[in-house]
Amino acid sequence: MTFGTGALRGTPGVVDHRLSRRHLINEFKRGRLRQDQVCDAHPELIRAARNLGSPASIACPICGDEELRLVTYVFGARLPSHGRCISNAEELRKLNARPDELTAYVVEACVGCKWHHLLRVLPVGRSTAKVRRTS
Image (cartoon, rainbow, N blue to C red; front, side, top):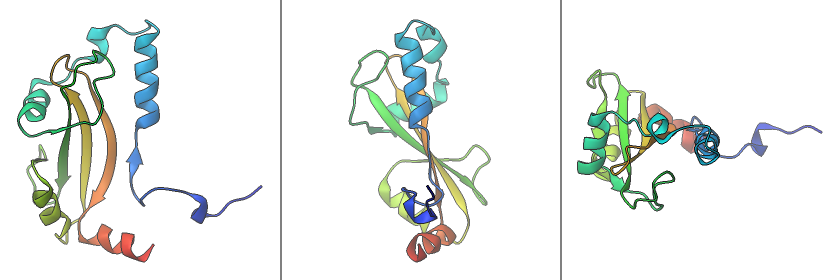
């Protein structure tokens, strides 16, 4: 059985980390990992989640708290070395219009228990928009 690239789903260049997320949650629920091993987000990430993050559509998979937030950081040329935390859709649209190749990282973070996980990595910028239009 063979398949072509047309059989692959998803946006070109997007890396989804749902499988590793599910594995980590399962290991915690089986008791193989302690809460302090999975709930160790950096204080700066929690601050960004609290102040700039958008609400997630689900509760925290570890503590069940409703304060699960999505935070997006963009890295690339002519941005600070620590990246740029995106606070709204308009800001992301402006970055997407730039000619530079940028990379966005979407992280979920629980303000309550400090759970965090990288959800996806996606291309941002004019050159990636061209690739998306021609595919």
